[in-house]
Length: 201
Image: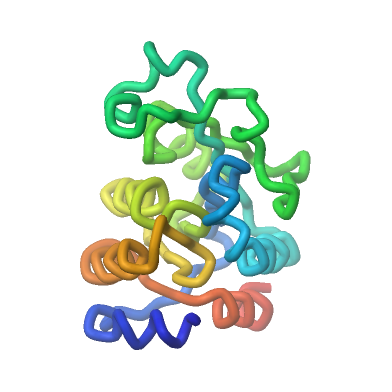
């Protein structure tokens, strides 16, 4: 499937780089029960990234999207979607395939961007992070918005094409094209894990 993405976005992937271990963090976006249908197909690639980063002592940040009171903290998301994730509900919890360790960071958010009204930027800077690797769901909403926000904060963004997923393939590929053109280096799970193993130790 990754080769298909590579072919589809080839006209926009004219920039290439690799993250630097001492400056890198992995952002695992919204791998929650609410998004099970979208998250499950990429869970294997996401866990491969998590495992590779753990083995190289790369910091991992997990986000959870949720609302304490949708009428008061839902904002435009409430008007747009109506059906919002309730903080603390079963749908809000991370899927079973994703394991969070005690030293990992969990970022609770209530907007598309993981940077909006959270401590993510401050925490990344505290670890000396300059490169962020993004995986998770949904490509065209929370993942893309977080990637764009990271870019305008001057992080180098590495977006994993086959470890992100959207509502459908058309939206997924459209986001990959947009991000490749203006915001992020598009990479794939296998190559990144190999690079981490060989070069980031």
